[in-house]
Image (cartoon, rainbow, N blue to C red):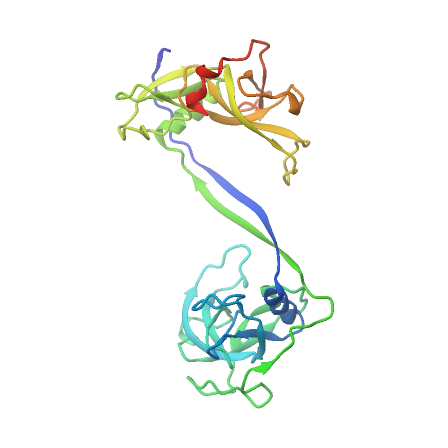
Length: 330
């Protein structure tokens, strides 16, 4: 393969990684979140008498299962804090606030949440706070909208006001219509700067070409290039064009439709060893029924008009590659 020369300008772009995380709840977490919906804060008592809030299902010291639920107060004491001057999307408040650890009255551990305060000078360890409930509650930690300063107790005092329980009160954990599962969105916003090696790789893809980098020591060609050989640990600068055809080394059948992805299921995602490359890249396989995709299938890229990367790979019609020709790339 001929060497590739030229240095493209550095690239960068905003990137968002997002997915919903769905989980079922056991009896302890179900009771805790349902309790928040009903403006009740529950903890769990361990064998040695400690009250943990938020509650957990297993004792962090003994690993014993624990289900002794108790109700604690909605007032508490700040044990430590940090000021957040620039709230981000999805955080509890859209104005500057403090992240605080609050030991609720009757609890022996602290709960992390937001404190609505006028400024960092208005926050200090030992200050008394109370829960501010959300107007609409669904059975989630966000049912506590935030904490707010509370003047009902002196700094450092753990005694609650008269209308709060002074000691944890046993609770059955039973509520009507309990919450049994939650969906927590996970999202990461950042700016991606690919660096020298991948900038050249992306620039070549925009020209419908695929380039890799050859290690000067072991002579392996890596696609996508990484700027260094992961085996030898030396810099890679000798760029070579590979493909465009390749061989399916292994694959999986996707049966769950992803949000915002306009691809009908089932479809196949595969590792493809491009001709001339010593590392398989992954891509979608199209132009063939999903149940006819196989190891050794010879494929080629399909580009959409104006696309900077292949939309998918399709069969070339060539005979399947011999297993010995790609077994080291599985």
